Length: 384
Image 1 (cartoon, rainbow, N blue to C red):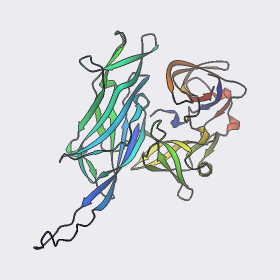
Image 2 (cartoon, helix red, strand yellow; image 1 turned 45 degrees about the vertical axis):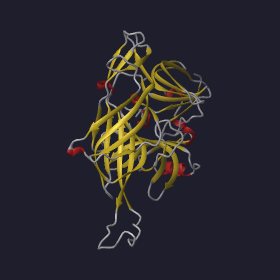
Image 3 (tube, rainbow, N blue to C red; image 1 turned 135 degrees about the vertical axis):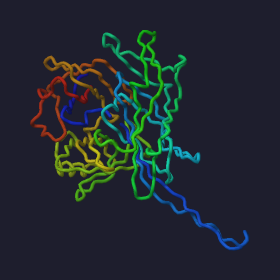
C-alpha cells in the first residue's frame, strides 16, 4: 500500500482495539387505582401512565484468545426479569470483531428499558457469515469455519447468563447502574487446524460484572452532536464499531488539560483541542478513548474530522514489525477499503514517500516525520 498519511499512535491508547458499551435508560409504569362503588360505566378514564427513567450502562469485551479476527453479527442483547418480561436493547444487528475487544470496552448503544430488577441477560450472535481467522504453525493467516460440538455448521447462538442475587441488574430512577459483559474467546473456542478446512468448535462462555471496569480502557465512537467549552465536555451520537447509520443514543465525554486531540490532522491538547472540535461541522466523525470513574468517562485521546478512518478512505491498521528504508512491514493488518469492504492480512506492506505526513494526538506535526515511525508502534496508514 502506497501511504498518503501514516498516523503514529504508539503513545496513544486510541490505537488499541476494543469492548463495546451499552447505555440503557429505564422506564417505569405507574397505574392509578379506582375506588368506591363507582360502576364501570361511570368510572373516569384511566390516566396516562407516568414514565420514570433510570440509566444502565452495559459494556461488552473479550478475554484474550489466539485469533487474528473473530467477526460475528451481534443481533441482540436482551434483559430478562424474573416475572418473564424481556427487554431487547440493540436497535440493529451490529457486526463485532471480538478479537479487537481484548484491551478495550466499547460503547454499543443507548436504549430505554423499564425500571426493575433483571435476573438474566442474553447475547444473540449469528455465526452464519462469521469471519474467523487463525494462524497456522508457520504464522500464516487461515480462515476457520465455526461448528458446534456435533460438527454442524454454526448459525444463530443464544448465550444466556443467569445472574446471582448480588449481581442483579437493578434499574431505578436517578441511580445509574452498570454491567460489563465478557465473551471469553479463549474458553469459548477450540481450534483444529488439522481439519480441511480448519474448524473452530464454539461453546460460548459469557461472563458478567455488575459494574464498569475502572481498570480497563473504554472507547466510544460516533458523530459530533455538541461541544461545551465552559463544562469541558462534548456529546456524541453513538455509532458503535463500524456502524454508520441508526439511532444508538448519545453519550457525553469529559476532557481535561491532559486530553490529547488530533483534529483534521492537527495535534492539540486540552482546551485548544476542544475548541478545534467545536469548529467542526455537526455530525463530524469522532473516536475517543478514555478512563472510567464511576459512571463518567474522562477522555485520554480524541480523534476527529478527517483524522478518523471513516468509510471514504483506504486504511491499513496494525503493528509495525519491520522497517527497511521507507518500507514498513505491518503484522496482523486489517485493510479497510473506501467502498466499505475490508480484508485481513497476516502481513501487509506500507510504503512511505515524500508526500507522506505523520500525525499523532497531542503532538505538533512539525515535530513528526516518517523517521518517527519505528518497530513496535501501532499505526493507521491512509493511502492508495
